[in-house]
Amino acid sequence: MEKKLETTTLGGGCFWCTEAVFDRVKGVERVVSGYSGGNVPGTPTYREVSSGLTGHAEVIQVSFDADVISYEDVLKIFMTTHDPTTLNRQGADVGTQYRSVIYYHTEKQKEIAEKVLADLKPYFDNPIVTELSPFEAFFAAEAEHHNFYNRNPEYGYCRAVISPKIAKLKKMHEKFLKPTIG
Image 1 (cartoon, one colour):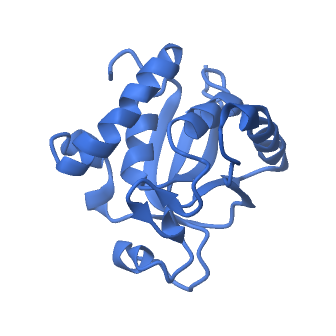
Image 2 (cartoon, rainbow, N blue to C red):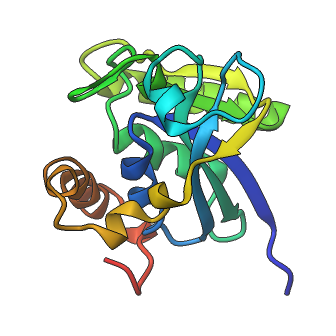
């Protein structure tokens, strides 16, 4: 049976974090760290995006099997494993490149995202500031950023920032975890 793959592009701060979370989600076939939403020509580099001057956000592009996990559930996991109430910031990572953003690929994705944002609003003490924008382009990050957490679990940032996000994923979304990766 052929898989029904869909794609979404999400920014929730550092792409190492969001990649590590979605690597562990059942139905997710592929996660690629990269950049989206910028306003400069050419392919951006990590250094350029980190400067905050390109307009790009650090994002992940997720390919998932819609027969295993719905887009709505993908978004619920996304919204509850980062802080969607801090403008241009995730913890110590500050700047527009760390904004909370959902780039929708279709009008149906936009409708679902609007519903999820509205449904989750009462669960947060502060207003949700997640940007909802049409997808335009995605640029894969440099190779050293791919699969970063799985290759460097003892790195200080991974232990201090990413491991707690994975613990939150396990606690809040256990039914969506892949059986092979904890």
